[in-house]
Image (cartoon, rainbow, N blue to C red; front, side):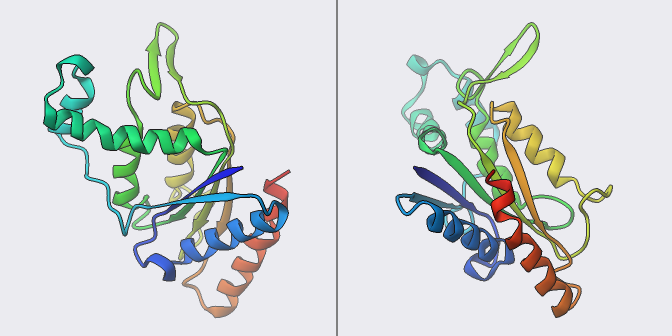
Length: 199
C-alpha cells in the first residue's frame, strides 16, 4: 500500500502538524508493515504559486505547447501522478491566520486541472481522480472546530471532493498554544482517535 504524506508546516519537522502526521503514519505502519511512504513537503520543496503563465500552459492544447509550457505542465503532471499512485493521502494541516498555508494552496493549484483531475458537465463539475481515503491531521493554536473561524475544514473537503476524493476524514489537535496541559491533552485525544478514523 502506498501512502502520500503531505507536510505543510512552516517549521518543518518541528511543526505540530508534522509531528502529528508523523505519529499517524507510524500508527499506520504498526498496522501494516508493508506500507510505502512518499513524502511531499511543500515547505522544503515549495511549489510555484499560480500565475497567468502557468494557467496559459494548462489551457493550451498539448500539441501546441511551447517548450517552456511543456516544462511548466510537467511539474503539475508529476504531482498529479503522485496523487494517483497513492492508495491513501495523509495531510498535515496547520492553521495560519484562519487559513491553509499559502504553500499548500500553491500545491493544490497545481492539482486542479480541467480535463485532467476534473471536468465540467451540464450537471456541474465532476472529479476525475479515483476515490481514496484522505486523512487530515489539523493542528491549531486555538479552538476553531465547528466555529465560524474554521475556514479550513470546508475548504479542504470542497477541494478534494472537487477532484473526486470523497472520503475525507479529519483529526483535530486544538488549543496547542493555550498552555502545556491543554496542548498535551489535545495531542493525546488526537492520537486516541487514530483507530476510529481508520474504521
